[in-house]
Length: 394
Ligand code: GLA
Image 1 (cartoon, helix red, strand yellow):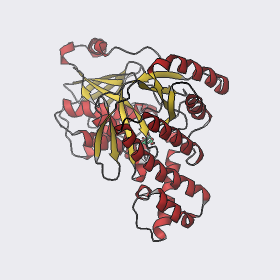
Image 2 (tube, protein in one colour):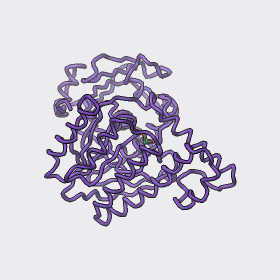
Image 3 (tube, protein in one colour):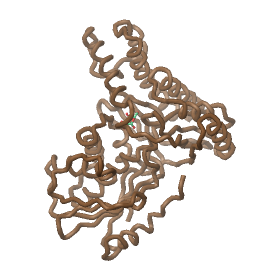
Image 4 (cartoon, helix red, strand yellow):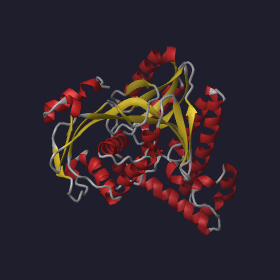
């Protein structure tokens, strides 16, 4: 991973781009996230267990005297200019600006009024398209910055929903609510167990004793829109519909217990759809077990559940691939590692491993060696701590 940007330099960098004085610039931070467990079930009414981590994207913002909207990013040079009265539409050539315009379009749709334009300078310490939600960090960090600057006072859950709506309506990705939710509401030293059916949530202390989460980036880039994400979602909807048509009274797959699914799966017939449904239902159970294990301080049990989750995502949900399998399976064999799995959407992106703090260095070296041998290029690693959701930085 390239060297991290020091956000204390951001007011000065902002002034270099836009002039004026540093004290007129407001800075906001927005974290990356890991999902400890509960993968691909947020859109199936399941429970998920993510945590915000201490890697942030920073948004510097200042209102303008005219109606222009100007975006710059320190790591992606090139200026984007719009007008706040534009009818914002997705356009490929607008690159990352689409994520921001998507948020503006959703805000306008909800009736928020802008009395002027604004200028933005961003910089991110979250690897782009790396599976720890760089795009949700962007959407929610920007939405929070705009809301606070214009006095909209949008609450954190609504910020999360704006982000998700922008993905659905603007970016054409049918994502669940997990990423935007944790990025908006996360709190240091906790993970959140979120019921995606009801949006009820609970902060659970993330007490890992001598263990740390190590993030393992495959460095295989992908975007959700290019991936088979939407396809997996439709397969789940198909399985659900077959069950409902067969008289099963549920509104989401994760309402079923593993035992109920075993009794009902003959109805689904199609072997592939059975495997997809099986992953969802068992993964939901694993989340409940993982939350109990963490609350009880049983990290060995938590680790075992991470391994089982990976296996299910590999064999039944089929969203891993050689890169994530090599990382997770090599990690699982290392001394001091009690569990490892892919995290996020899969198809590349990142994995996480729960590793004893004294073994992290050796762990990284061994997994890197094997990864390079099998995949042909290097992975990147960092051990993380939990972080806060979207916040004022200055
Ligand atoms: C992506 C989506 C989330 C979730 C995960 C898989 O990160 O944005 O809503 O579905 O994939 O668990």
